[in-house]
Image (tube, rainbow, N blue to C red; front, side, top):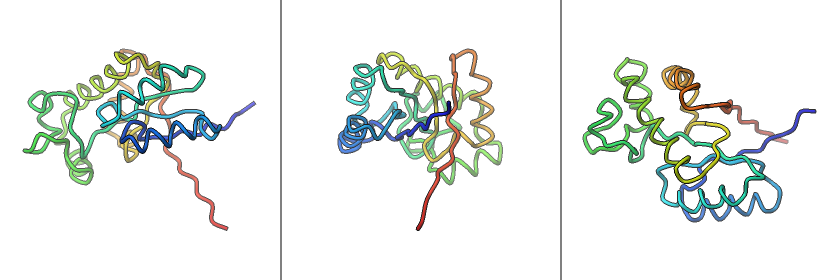
Amino acid sequence: MPRLIINADDFGFSPHTVDWTVRCFETGVLSSATIMAGAADFQRAAAFARANPQWSFGLHLVLSDEIPLCPPVSIPSMVATDGRLWPTRQFMLRSAAGLIRSADLEREIRAQLLRLREAGVAVSHIDGHGHMHRMPLVLKALIRLKDELDLARLRPAQDLYYAP
């Protein structure tokens, strides 16, 4: 029988986000969450995931706007002059123009996934901040890395809204 999976993303983004995500798990609202590997409250989100194997946790892949996990010099096509990942719009434009190197993208994906696994998180699925995992370049990279990184599931991005 199909079941409804309610996933919260941005887990670890801030103490406030972690507090409310935990509360949603504890009240039965959530069945899974995706964790931002480079976020401010990553350690607390990872600790909660380790302590709660009854729920599903994944990687919330961040490819824009933030500080990368890889040294900027190792992913030059993905970072601006300040060393941060390109802002979302620039990342999308650079990706469409072929200016984001697949090797750089795959290196950052590996680093983020490895950080979760090294923190003891059993990674069940991946999605992307701003639904970046749906972009052709990113989706192709995830498909290429599927076997190497033992990726079982990619969460489709379909936000449903109801307006009475």
